[in-house]
Image (tube, rainbow, N blue to C red; front, side):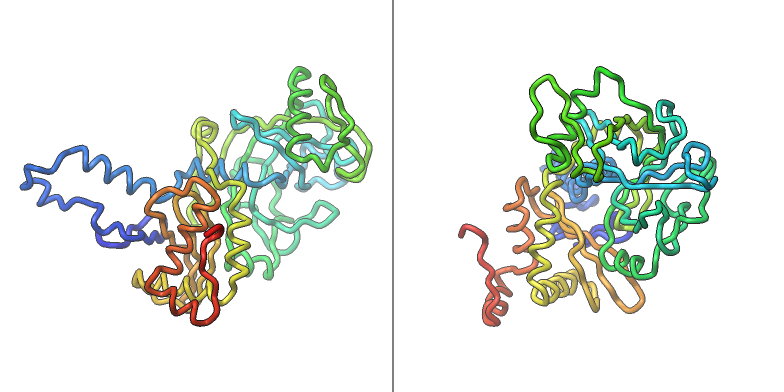
Length: 361
């Protein structure tokens, strides 16, 4: 298979050239144990998270989503689609719940089951009047043609488009229905919102009482309704340009990556290294046979890093896996340093005053 393995559009494997058995030698070598092939296959599969794991991780990593309502369910004065951003929580079973304050609720029938498209991780700019900004076609983000949505407003500005081209992120589009949570779920759910978004609730609540929204959350002391999202369709839009339909069972069974709440901090720390990180990324790509002009570190999980590369008019995302899964934030940072600053090149960077010691060393 060589040193580079292809997953999605581009997948660059790190030092796996000796991992895949040669079929001819396998047939002739009687000493080759079949279990070794199973071990190799498992190792190849663990280069990247599964689509369901990426989708679950994306949902767990974010805390708010853009809810897009068709004109038939909202109470706005126009009959076109309308949308607003709301916070959500995810329980241990992968169920998603939203809290919508009464004075922000635009549903005609707040107690009914209302059709909605939920966009997570898409970074679509929204104005205060519930309109998206710029040029964005909703058909590009996974809304099924049969769902009665109007595409007149869904557009994104060129500046946002350029930023997303340079630093894309995984996005999830969910088509489903919002229905009010059952009464016996409410106390438990309000506690989830309280613990996940402590700044959004008053802290003077007691056991047996449901936390109440404060003026700090939404700028209002009004009541709120908790909604469960009944999922009909889940679609993942990955940084590799691939779109994948995810079954509800696979999504709920998937575990979020162990670095789900550490990724942003890790990326920020490496971005602070500025030009030296960019130089190291270009060197890493060159080592793998990729001739590029620019490179950005855009993602990291327990299995490896995602790098956005630029060569002329071509833009793509490459995967550089770790040899061993990272089980902590510190371990992941150490593995990234080993990829970007191998011992053979550390002296060069240190001669320019760049500090390469691992934290705590």
